Length: 485
Ligand code: FAD
Image (cartoon, rainbow, N blue to C red; front, side):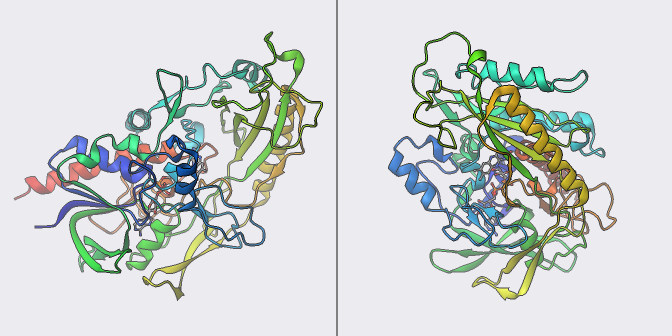
């Protein structure tokens, strides 16, 4: 008998959601979640922004933030470490219980139009998105009380709303608002609920999966793990293995395990990101006394949705502080400074890829991560259109505060496609529509890396939904095995 029914590699939002869905569907399952990084703060997988004490919060972030910023990159976002890949200078990862989900902004738009994989059953995908929203505690009402948010949405709606497309509105956010109005940001701890206390479910932090063990019949039999504190290596056995270790490290673990389908690491897709800032016009501000505070604890987040004929989506954040000096004579109302982030759809290419250098192994025998990545003419056109649109958005709001700028590749933190799913084993995908790796019986992949389309929207909700579908398919498969004499 195996040590566990399912071993899941990675405790980010997707790995945690898969564990939760499996456990909810079958409480008897014996589940092990492996996480290379440490627990940050008081609860495993809690969002660091929920740590009330500023010095404890800073310490939690510092525990995982890398310090080295190579040429061409901007400093890593707090909680992330740069991978160090010249073709994608801002490519980054988070290594801690909760993964990037302990640090993320929590924007959870649904995909639309051609962002949705056409080969998925629409009803099943819709149901999985609803379950993902439930697990992530997604709401569109988090910022109902935020200053000036209705004004921002009205101005942007007047500029961008079109018949037959999704309107400008509040960004769906993975947040719970407490009775006192304070936000609780969803980290994987929220997805887990009481999961880590349930019998048969184990979360093992500080434990690196360095190989998936595959037998001669292409069945995963377990995982070889390293206890990073002691260096001890051991093997855990399982009836199925799910790798949800992010879009750079999931394909690496498959590569290191000898699972190397032709599409592995290919179709790497990072959303080019254009940024700008604006100050809402005084004349558009509703009557209210200026309170003199530009810093607000809960700022609004609005959304200009993606449409297939408009290859980007807009995330509009009312900032806690102006990103540029506004001058001593400028007094702004809370919520009046607005940051605009436009994420572009990337044209997909098999040549955009992450690959693994067996000539450069780390102490655990895992190969260095290399990236090849190019923007096509269509990508440059999309970026130019996004720059024009973000200027229009800033003008619609009032006074642009700076020229739009394009962030270095990798800045979106939305890497996709590197173990993409597909309807057929034709060399252009790594897994089937349930996340099962082609040619294997019981090895699954999950995360943004399975998203096969060129999305512009923030991908976590989509990845969690696809993970929910994988968990359901895996549970059905395990049950069939149990029933087969
Ligand atoms: P991750 O969260 O990256 O978790 C993967 C985990 O696997 C990591 O903890 C890693 O340590 C572990 N792991 C990897 N390999 C191994 C191994 N071999 N053994 C053991 N453990 C391993 N997305 C949105 O949709 N909306 C947003 O608003 C948004 N904002 C963001 C803001 C920031 C600052 C950051 C950092 C990210 C943001 N993202 C956002 C991206 C979002 O966080 C990711 O899409 C999401 O976390 C992906 O979930 P995941 O579970 O697939 O991977």
